[in-house]
Image (tube, rainbow, N blue to C red):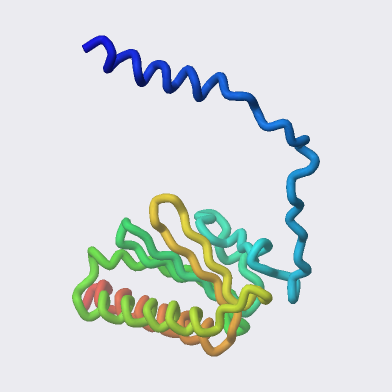
Length: 168
């Protein structure tokens, strides 16, 4: 029985007392840096300060950009800085009716799908970020994609506001 305890201990002792490699550290193979095709590359992705910035999303968006954040809390946030105006809309999909939730989900899905088609690591046309909690942010400056989400967010917000307004 004591032999079964002794054998693993001897194996660990032998592994720890093995001689280290005699190769000098500076002889390790070097990884050559590749020149990116544009200002951005796989190793230097575009970044947006607007993502996850509760205090200054619109202020950190360049003219023409639209942002969407979606996460596990069930909130879809849309912020935009377009030529025809800027704004921020927060849609809690757990608290709206089915029609509004479907419209928010469809607008978000279209935005993500079209952003995926337009994504190119050599440009900052589409910027993606993800937080550890699973919240996902995308910032797009392709006019057809950005304007479509901004317009739909304004329309959805108008419908929510009109439904909540008291009737006389």
